[in-house]
Every structure is written in structure tokens, then in C-alpha cells.
Length: 418
Image 1 (cartoon, one colour):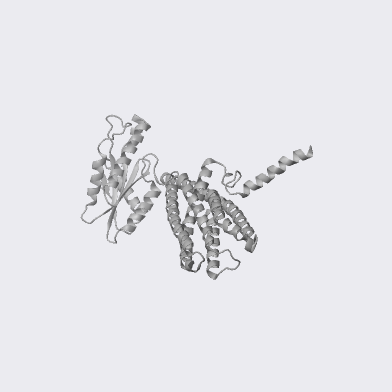
Image 2 (tube, one colour):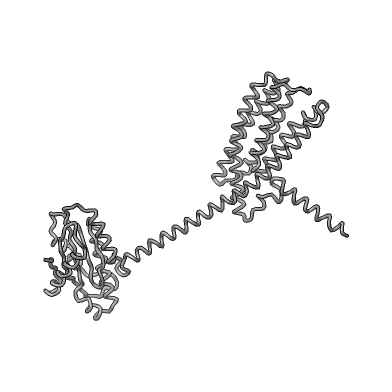
């Protein structure tokens, strides 16, 4: 009873360990990634890195093939070495084209399965040809320097190919099968001369490379997951920063704009005047004017506060148009039914002409839906002129005195400060 219960558990444990070691197994790191979108990202990232490494390995193989062709005349079967090298060059070109196609398909989010399969088969053929180079050796115990260099080049090339294919398990398996088919015949043929040491060494080397490929794949998977997490967090951070910037802009507008007329408030007007003065020249002239809506309380009492709001919105809209249609102009709601404007004027412009322009655009009735039929409003204006180094508080006080005179002298008029 105890044996029956232990055996399946032991087999399952062994199978679990083997399936974790073999790249691409049922419990391999790539298959264990949760979520289809995450798996797709990790798979594409691993394929991209695999193809880039294979392209780099292809360039290194060209150096090895050049060395093989250079040493071929010193080998036992030079014609065989040259023929294998030529086939190798053809395979390298085909693999290079397949790798480029896979990389383009990955970048364009296209299906790359078939092209990747062709690349894996090409890597298997490459591994077979690297092993087949050893067939040009004689079955003797001693080796010449040329044969030693060719054997070393083949072993290094096979190792590099296994490392390059570690990120894609089918490529590892294909390279392993190809290298084994190319190397085992000569290892078996030379066994009566040198013993099984060559065969055992090859098996151990392939086992080490297979284990390294599994560990490398596991680490690459973790790196890909971290990369995806970094991208995900970067996008979320960008969205949060965008929302924060939008909120800050809205807060700035709320802090600087009057909620009813959407004009600058007093603080924003003072900062805008400082900027206007900083942009001017020492001999520039400025005008500061205060506008007060005549009989505004009567409008509220007779037509209601909605009509009063419509009048304020109309003044804000008109003064906003005046500000945008001229250079160096600023307008704001000063408080209640009072508005304030400032402008830089040249020496040829009469200050009174600016005030007349304001009166002309404020005279027509408003067109917003809340404007009562037959309602006509006017404004009293007090203004002053000053130089570049003017103090806004002082000039506002002067304009306010002129506004007081305009109201006392009949309203719907303007007066210049003394």
C-alpha cells in the first residue's frame, strides 16, 4: 500500500523536475507566465532577443568559415571541408534572411510562427554542418594543428549556437539534434582508436549546454517580465502625470479666472501687468482704466440676478474680445460690477481713443439668452496714463478717483485722472 502511494508521487516529482529543466517543456518558464497578454509579450520579447542574438552569431560564424577555408588545404579531406563550408555559407545566408523576416514580423505584430520554424530548421542544419566538418579528419589518434583548430572552431560555434537559441526552445532542440547527427558518426567511428572519451565528452557538453540554456531562458523570462512591468508602470505614470498636469492647469485657471465671466481675477491681473511692464521699453506709455456698470443694482432688482449675471458675462465677453484684438492689452474683473483694463500705447495714440473704443464695443446689448428684452446698460469709466515704472496700486487709485467723478457727473461717461 505504501509503495503504491509513493511511486506515482515520485514519478510526478521527477517529471516535474525534468519538465522544468527542458526548455519549452510543459512547466517551462514561458508557459508558466500568467495571462494571455503577458505571455504574448514575453514570447515576443524572447523571440526578438533570440533573433538579434542569432544575427550576431551569424556574423561570428562568417569568421569561423573564413578560418575553415584557410585551413582546408591542411586537412585530410580538403575537398570535403570546402564543400561543407560552401553549404555552410548558403545556410548562413538563408538563416540571415529568415531572421530578418522574423524580426520584421515581430515588429509589425504579424504572425511569425512559420518563419521562426524555418529559422529553427536552419539552425539545426547549421549545427549538422559544423559537426560534419569533423568528417574531414582521418581516423587516427593524433591530430595536426589545422585539425585541432577546425575542431575547436566547430565546438565553439556549436556552443555559441546553443547559447543564441536558448531563448527559443525549439531552436535549442533543433541545434542539439543537428549537432548530434553531425558529430556522433565521427565520434563513434573513432571510438576504437581513442575510446569512448570523445563520445562521453560530447554528451556531457551537450548536457551542460542544455542546462545552461534552461537557466538562461528562465532568467530571460524574468527580465522580460520586469521589462513589461516597467513599460506598464511607465504608461500608468505617464497617465497619472498627464492627469496631474491637467488638474494643475484646471486649478491654475480656477485660481486666476473669475468663475462667472472667465476673465482674470485681481491677482492674475496684477501678475499680467508685471509681465506687460517687463516686455516694454523705458519710454513706453500705459493706460489704466476702471469701468463700473451703471445702475447695476437696479438691473438685479428689476430683472433678477440671472439678468445681472448675463450683464456681467456680456461685459466679460466683450472685454475679452477687446483684449485679443489688440497688442499689449489686459482686461480683468476687479470685483462686483467693476472691471479693469490696462494697455501699452504708442505716442501717436490718444488715450481717449482707447476709452472711446471701449465705450463703442460695450454699448450694444448682449446676445446671451439671459439678457432681458429692452435692457440697455452703460458704464462709467475713469482712467489715467503713466510711464513704464508705474505702480499699479497708485494708478488704480487715481483711476478710481476719476471713476468717482464720472459717476457724480451723470454716469455713462469717462474722466481722466488728474
